[in-house]
Image (cartoon, rainbow, N blue to C red; front, top):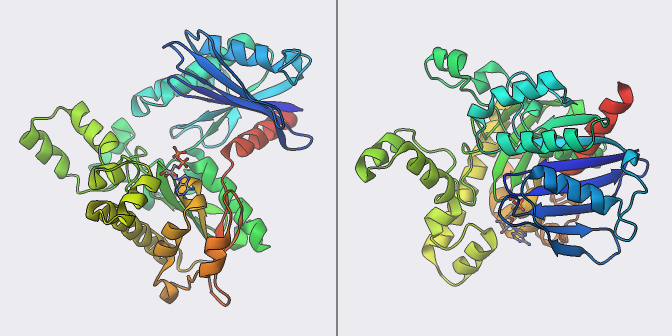
Length: 400
Ligand code: ADP
């Protein structure tokens, strides 16, 4: 069976077509500048990428173009659209009700529409992508895979904020957690790499990219995660502040005469690595600046490492131990230096990394970097959210 995985953003739509008999991606690409002018990059393994500027007024146009290319006699990989057995959609937020991957029927879509208020950035484009696929492929099952659903096992004490309880009841303000599909994939792959049963392990996954989060998985169940009501909480990120004293918000609103939207923009787009360093949101450029002696760049990286250590330590305390520590995503997979800084002086907690193994692990490779004899096994595992979405989708449509 072929499964099409769709990740729709406000002006982009990424896709991957999986052949589930082999688990291989047979075509993938990205529609960009939807609603602005429009372009597409379409790739097939071993072939030259196809790039074109094509007017894309909306997500319907983007999906129509993707389907046209997938079945194109020259550029395509399918004889007919009917070969697509199902479509799996990446959806950031499943709210409290969508606690697992599910068929996107009218009721599920109505629920997604009802929670747009708590997911204003990612909700509307995801819904547009789903609706476009339903219109263009009416007989093909559509499945939603939610970044939040991995956290349905997090206990109340970790997801209820110590605010008036009515805020939870009335506005559903609570920790939801994000990047769940990545944490789920990486933790399962880690158990496999460790040669142990998933539900026999205490695992911490550090997903460190432009957006970053850390999740604790205790005997197969996510028990805590650093992102919260929105992806803003927790670690400092490329441009997001992560956790700060909440009183800073009203204080700067008054001091700087900012509106709610303006302060949100400051916390979301002008903080984190970019805000502290003043150099870039991209870790590579911040590191280059640090190497040239830029003190604020060095400070930005120190803060990132400090918060990572703090969260890892607190999750070890919550789980009363740790078997496996994993690094993933842009920085976690590629940046041996950040991994070395985070794991330095953690031998008290059983974490010790071998410098040669850490630096020797090539880009995009998975492997173990722990020092011999370390109590905790430390792994680097490239994430693959799309594969997880395809797998869930396949399981749902073949079971139903
Ligand atoms: P997103 O959260 O947007 O998916 P990614 O997971 O792709 O982001 O991570 C982007 C981050 O990864 C950037 O800060 C970038 O500097 C960093 N990164 C990517 N490749 C490397 C590399 N080879 N070495 C160090 N950092 C890298």
